[in-house]
Image (cartoon, helix red, strand yellow):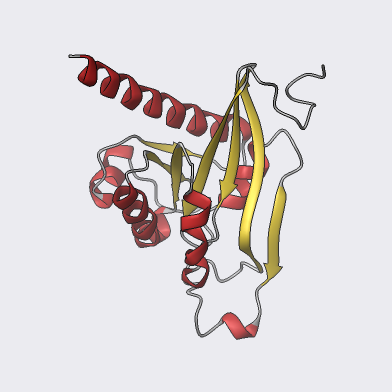
Length: 198
């Protein structure tokens, strides 16, 4: 049998886990999936056009020329028995109807945030809180943006879970965000199991 990283099929003894990467328009979701995926990521990017100007808020990302219109998809093997399937959500409000379908069966999520436009993260935070899907916040540190501490971002977003700084362009940084999410989910599962056993 081929190795887990080179075989497109998932062996029976391997746990395959669905993870969402969500957040506002232009926060780096496509970049994060691409930086960490061990396969060539599937992307559904299209050029921004003048028709989107009245409905898409490009404040703070005026230089952006493409947008995800459906999803990004990638895969990473954390260890020989755990494969993460990564689904990046579209960021513009007009594509949010897809989030429910993408969230179906997800173990957890990363809300990717940009401190230049932190308000664009609230919809993703609300989405996962309302559905009871565990999530953490990854703050993509853009060049030239004012830097904040993780606890400052946690207070601004009013979240209790993990918040960590990252660079979505760098594989190791993106991988650390994914590991932190998996650890967060495992901690929740263990605490629920302990609570039900007592």
